[in-house]
Structure formats: structure tokens, C-alpha cells
Length: 321
Image (tube, rainbow, N blue to C red):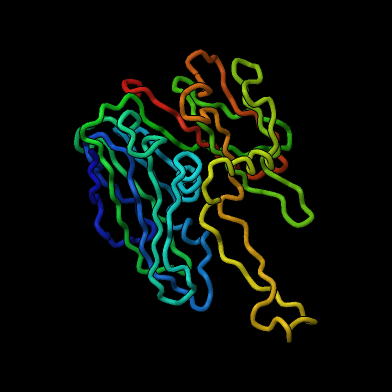
């Protein structure tokens, strides 16, 4: 049995604030954070980047310690890549005052509704959701928030999912190491890099990765950005919420293609994200153990000095939080 209930019912949002909300005390599978808003621009599709930029940080804190912590764009990536969850946002038709919504997933297990992988029972006020809203919203107004939770009151959790963000900025294009947390098993790692290849420019902030454990290559001896990014198609889920597209008219063909033109699709919104999977079958066979590690890191070969974000998906045994 599960209980799907409302935590926050259509609360008006003020830019630049960081409200907190107590979460339910029963074992918790996941939360659904939905933003409702009006498009404040006419005759064009609202840039999806503007929607993701509304939330600077979403956090779930247990007695002040992070269980889930990332920006909204990374939350979309983790929801899709870890849990195969994609929001069906509505009303992307490009009209002024169009009422729209989008839902972000905050998971506590890789398989939603799992009675063995979810957050254990807590006391009131110990588990808190905190949302940090951007200082301002672009082409968006009338914002409100819904939060709903899925509890599993009869479950007996053995473990839960923890995902928090680390950041790094290379100082050169030489290889460097980003330490990974030791103690919990790691199911996957999500990476984001500021730069990806473009027209006639092959630069990628994350060119290559290597996983190292106890000062040796481990599981991933080397992989390139392009292959890691493209292999995410194994998830059998759509590649995120697509951005808008434009129609390009060539002068010589204007009369023939006056209204239709050539469609130029945009990159999907997860174009800069990478998934490094370990527990690919979710059966624990290949999960990355860290309890026997003296050191553990991702070695990154950067193509420039752009920002990088790293989010390990830790599987925490109950009693180890």
C-alpha cells in the first residue's frame, strides 16, 4: 500500500526566498515538486532554460544534513537517468499568459514505490524540503508551488538513495581528480560540464573520464564524452523535455517556403549531462562498493576551464545515515 498526499497546496511563490516544508514521517518513496506559472511573453515558446532557472536549489535535509541537493536542471537529469522519470509539462504553445506547469522528482529510491529502497521513518520536523527560488524569473509570472509525497507506511526499508552535488572548476586542461564519497555503495554518477561541441568547435569541458579506486583504474578505464552521453539511450526514455525550435528561411526560397521553412531543432536540455552507471541492472552485481576503498575518484580530462558538477547516487544502508 502507498499513500499519495499533498504537502504544499498551491502556495504563492516569491522570487529570492528559501521556504522550508516538513515532510511526512512514514517511509517515503519520493516527492513531486510542481511549479505552476504563466508565460509572460507572446508569440514564442518560452525557453525551457527559464523554467529550470526558477529553482536555484532543491534540498532535502535530515537533521540539517543533505540527503538530496541540486539545482532544478540536475534534478531533471537525475530523475530521468536514475529513475526513468520525465515530467509531461503542459501548454508549451507559445502564447502570452498561457498557464503552464512542470514537475520535478525528488526520489529516495531508484525504483519508485520500492518498499525496500525508500527513506526510513522519521520524527516530525527531522526531514525537511527546502527550495531556494532564483532572485528573479524571466518571461514568467504568477508562480505557485505544489508539493506531493508518496509514503509507504507498511514498508520495511533496507536502504535509501542519497544524491548531493559537488562542484569543480579545472584550472587547466590537465587531468584532475574529483574525490567520491567513501562508505556507501554508489549506483551511478551524474556529471554536467559547461561546454559541449558546437559548430566547428570540438571543445568539451569533460572530454574523458576514468574511475579510480585504491590508486588503480576501476571499471571505467577510460571513456569519452560522446560515447558516455550517447549510451544513455539504453534507458529507453526520451532525452528530457525538448527545447523550442525555429524555422529558417533562405532568401532564394522565400516564396516557396514562406510559412514553413526549414526546421532547426534545438539540443535537448540534458545535452551537457553524462551518466556513469555501475549498477546497470539494478541487481547489485556491478554496484560500486566503497567500504574497501582507501581512495576513490573520477579522473577528468577537461577540454577547457568551464564549471563541472558531480552527483554520486549513493545507496545508503539503513543505520548508516
